[in-house]
Length: 166
Image 1 (spheres, one colour):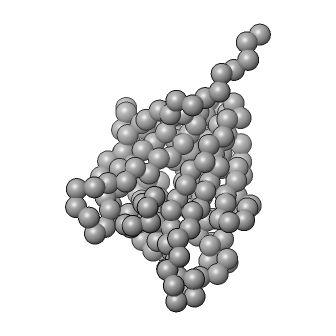
Image 2 (tube, rainbow, N blue to C red):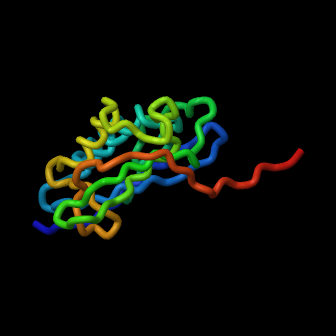
């Protein structure tokens, strides 16, 4: 029927209780997709992300809250330590989209890089680059679908709240 835009927002928590949102921009056909399809898509997205996180997914949103995978953050998990996958965009040459994964699993890094040949990384890239039904992961302007992963790097966010002094 009509192509609509949406955001699946996953809330990731680290060991210290800090949280951050991880948006995934999607497009879908409003005539063919129902909430059951989105529930399945969100569940599978979390299952593909989970092996790459030291943090825990504590909430997922798509207009309404959805019950996520859950689990406890790994000891030492930090949402500031992210894994950034540089993704090509379909239909445009020379541009890329940064798919930033908070509290990226420390053991998955190879130095300061994310090995794109890692089984869990390959599974996530495959999942977010191939449509499920009419659900397609797109960039933040909903203009281009994600293509292949170009590279992956360890990155850091700077937004942690100052801890209380004792």
